[in-house]
Length: 53
View (cartoon, rainbow, N blue to C red):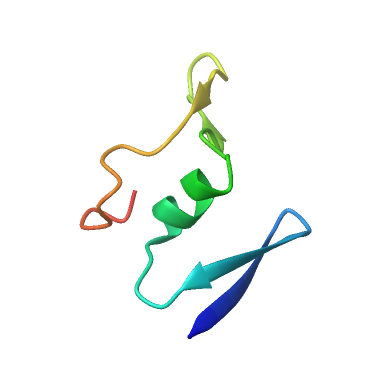
């Protein structure tokens, strides 16, 4: 089963059970937020989804 997710206007096809972090990384997105102090690009913390980072 495929699940369609839209991120910044781009349609991404995810597999059932795939984490959001896994989907973003598989689509080539390796940074999607910035650090609070300096505004530098930042990616996920661990990638397994337990901490919801």
